[in-house]
Length: 336
Image (cartoon, rainbow, N blue to C red):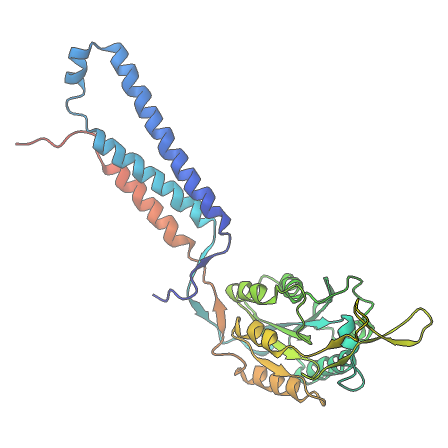
């Protein structure tokens, strides 16, 4: 059995399971104690030893432990145990793709012509036009993330939304890759289609939550490809001031703020899900190479959905314990 990527979808329920099991065992022991006290009050001490001569306290404890363990396993089943890899060979129309586009102020840097954001939007449009099949959606993000276009095959509507998306689409400043990935996950339907996320950003994850979010997406069967927009050398961030003129963004000490492509972070985000990191390139050649890899099915190491549900194993173990508990007698073993 493949036990790769063992985890629980709701790990907090494991604490509930343990507490529930302990409470069950305590309640059973309390009931047993009340039973013995009641019997002691009913019979004289001389008769009590005779009445309980064939009773095994150790077997009663074993039965109680089995019931408590069954309770733990049943509650743990609701925590969503997952392990293994389910292979899927679905392609083309059975493929859902969500683009997560960085619209923070750093995407206005002109180290790509005319700007990072304009080049990224052109690359997305060209990707969808050449891909031609499957559902596509769009998430815009900065310090917050928002689903701009739900998954659809109406490419005209997608292109209109893409064209209207700019640095004013998200009012919260910053760059939060983690929130972008979480919003992208919510955009997918509950089906067995292959699910891909392509995030286009300069990689400056100011909230530092992108890698952890990517690991969670991997467990849910999503693959994230990271497209680096910009150059390692970077450039100054220029925005419109109150007078409508271009002004260079400066920090509190008056120094010019430069935005650089963070390849290390984007590489870790992609590799956490089995995806790829690529540079966009001045002509969008990186996105074209990624499109061809996705079309050929070679964009990741195999194709599949990680995190196969395994609740039935815990439920089966709990039922087995219940059966064993019912077969255990509280009578002492009689010697011939």
